[in-house]
Image (cartoon, rainbow, N blue to C red; front, side, top):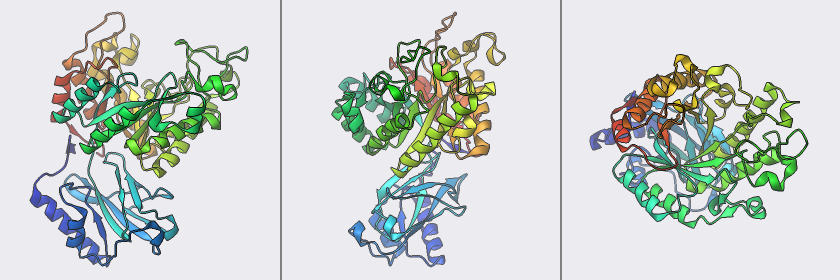
Length: 468
């Protein structure tokens, strides 16, 4: 188990850790470059000097003539252990570490850059010109809020978010890169985005994200996926349709791209890749089929077809985004974890867990109808409702991959019949239930930005045990 930051802070402990890694290296007969992800206070030049490395630092990727090999470690319950199945990329090739945490790249696969993604730990991205490397990952429990597309460009909102970071109430943010209307900030605008007029000025967002990076904030870029008010109107063959053959319009008045179409999937993957320099993680939302009636594609597609399409997108996105050096997550309907079927939308936790780093069920208590999960009025039981759903999601995901469960929680007032008010007590109950249920971190949803700060403060006292 580890706490919200979960990392030893004593300088002596960090020094002993470094020494132990170097000893391991010499035992293995390797000349290593130790990447000090575990200790930002120690420079790489200091670490290199301490290791007595015989490797020569190269100044050009074109000069590589030897394989790049290395090992990745994490801290687990106070001890160093290999990070098995971590995704390691040079930007031109992607591998996964073996059971001992080892990875290897051929000379032609090297670029001078290295990225490592392992669920539950910080993403590492940095130059690497030595032939051998040891990397120790720092654990990560996300405490995030969501900032919507229409507000993130406002200076006052950015200043407010910085204040939350500076007071250690959050260590992560979720920022829209592409919204429900299909608008995309220019930092992620591909040629197709430009072609259809969906690009929006994003220089202030880029600056904001850079400032957050300088503070060590984990940045999550939200990409609204198949719900899209722009792309389907330009590329109707890649859209979903109604029974008459026209564009399908959902209950919100929006069009949808088709998850069955490679072009529509690729469009959203390319946006995520384009945003990779500004975030540590790309999160796909509305990564499903619509649940409303009137969808022509539902007539000739089975549940297996639906699940195959969404799972295929997860595989394609995973390959492209892990190669680009970022983590990947999907938002899912909470009910999919408890219903025993895809609920008509194509989401399968078991299938997604093979490809993703995080699965984020939307477990808002107000999203459950009366009688659900054994509660006459679920919004009146925020903790138990979240615990049941997170536990169910963890149980489905764990046997099928390395994905961890990090849910979306309700930080807005109940919208069902009783209209219950949600304040710090109700929000904290959900966060505590997530930790108890085996989730790892949380994200709060309130597009009005009226987040319960006391609940964020109380979250600092919790412990998390995703690997138990």
